[in-house]
Length: 570
Image 1 (cartoon, rainbow, N blue to C red):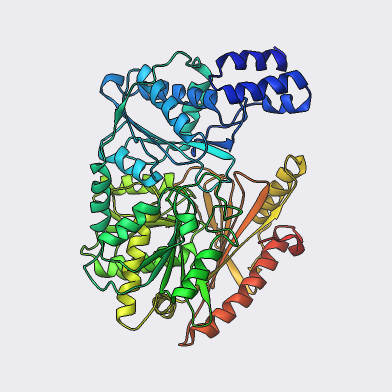
Image 2: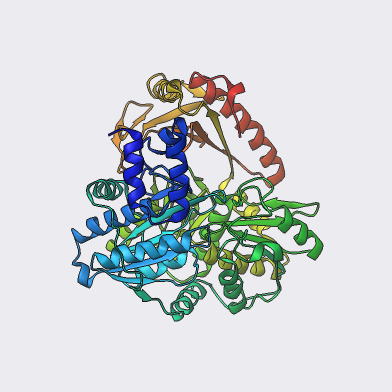
């Protein structure tokens, strides 16, 4: 079947007048634009679907959402009787999220499932919370998180409230291909979720706080035009934080994100307005959520300006704080990912609790929490360096709202003692050494066949021709995550208890470690480097030494991978 015929067939499935008109215009014009729309389809993976809005199988639209939901329903029906299985559906406030969510509800109801849905936009952590609370077979959140305004997405959770793993994503993708596209659907179906579930989430979050301690803290907050705003502010208010100023022009949900170039708190400039208000208010803490509320960003005053905290700093400060002040013993555990800081493991050892390390992605951290449940361990906190934090067991995914609450609690306790979060970070550096990190990458042209070869050659060189030293420190181990083997310098090999992935890691005698892996979403080869610098009392001097050492290690790592250090980007 040629492209025009496929497009005309697609046209018959599309219930949306806007995308039907768009596709008809592409058919009439013909050429490369039409070919591109039918060059495959949006890939369904562990993060579900994400892409630009528009007509055709390579865009986010009502046909794609109906097909995806039919696949989810077919796969879920293999393990659950639809008549007794709950599926929860939520959405953010992006363009078409309401329509996509209604289509998902209709498809699931037509398949016989007991569908519960949020009538209004909700943050992603609320969807994950209710999926777990109700014992639902699955949860679907229509969101593109912090992507640009013209994108939308579709995220799937499974029983237990965690994100789907690769094997399950592959099975759903196969079911999407094998299942007919639903067309005739009843729109008046499903059951609206009651508002008191939000009260339940709030109560669960408040139980995470170690005490009803000091609340004398001036906070400036932004949800970056997303859906977390009122939820985070109400949560802070219920805990007693009443001096919370918000960025008015960013507080209400707005799918166009008009005041930021990219609605991602990690992007340069995204928090400029927030920091300006913080300076004006002489605030103690800046907090931000991304548009779907699952990530947390924070900044603190330094005396001559403001400093954004890294994801590792937020995760480690919160872990140390909770392990110090919450009750419990060795049954507790914490977890992070292989590209996050080693500092968390040292904090866990200090407090005598369990520690787990997983591949990148909260799907694996949620799985580690589930394994902990089976072993009688209680997950206190899990985090990844990309501003994702999971605290407690009510939400089995990153939750930027509860993380904001606990970080405010920690900051208020420090302020009451005449200190700040930076003082707490300095304490960690004195206790465990200063852990400094750098993340850099080499970009190759999208679609360039040489790009994958570049990544493969670099990984092979690090694995097969490992240097004896990097920056004057002996290499003590090399780990190939694709084969699942770690080789020590004495020739001993050990197996990893992780799924295979394309990544090579090196560890140095001085405690430094580094990982190299291709990006899963962009034409990049990523480099993660961490050095550990002893602190003899002067943390700022150790920080300066660590910065210099990072430069040396990154340069020699690039050379060891056969790459010109001049190619590095940040």
